Length: 389
Image (cartoon, rainbow, N blue to C red; front, side):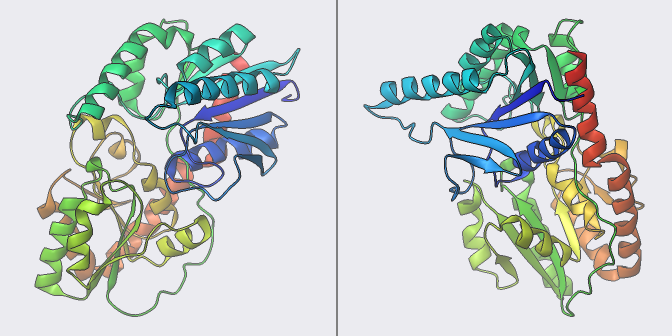
């Protein structure tokens, strides 16, 4: 049924390798390809760790192209912007399938980097689906000049260009309500949460030693890293027998490097490629999703929560967004007050003092992951949306 369908995924995410956004896209790609849907990826500029892949190629049967890697502030900006837009529009024209259903999937909604591509695609006959994973029109925590520009841009673009959407995907109940109010009633919206592959397998035997507490992610302000460090240091002084393992990448990492360097029990292992990353998560004793309680943090839904639950290890997660819609406190996860170092410390102490109960919670969390965050089930929702357009 998918032979005449052509879906181009476009956005500022890493590809073929990358962090949370890449994995969301890859789960969709894998399912659609299995349904005989033609898929392609147009990556807008470099994001995350420096890519070692070529700017064009194929991965798992999906052709991809990366544009805009040479965009820099400076005398050549006008030229590189023209080159960027010419390359993007030319790629969309080349990838369009005559007599087919052409879909442009815009990850992250309407942005200054993609708005001309969305307009051009509509003129070419593409139908547009926007995937919204955060509320870029909310200004809290974004008071730098760049943050204000991004907020203002989000407000303007949402106001004038949301009408380009033929359909929309959102990741949370909050965003479902927000964009339900902004869009015309005729535009279908689908809530598609995070996805994580949760394989049935025997739990790996962990090496003996102190309790391994793990955080993996982007080190953004919303991730509550400062509170996690405060909590860990408190528990370490009080009880010992624990280490904090950090991995990932992000601009804010430098803010925490002095504290990491000053405590031998805090170890930063860098950015890990997929195979090594999942082994790293499997070897954890406790995994932490320590979000702040801001409206910005509550608008989305933590991608890493699914990956953590999939390991079958116990997860400490802040009570933000839709967490309680899927998980029960002390049954599937330890759900704590957002932005509270004391709450994080209390949960860590509980895991140290009650390892058997923590293990049971982790296994129950994996069962909920299989129930709610199955990649195929969630990607099927996207395919149903595409077919309805």
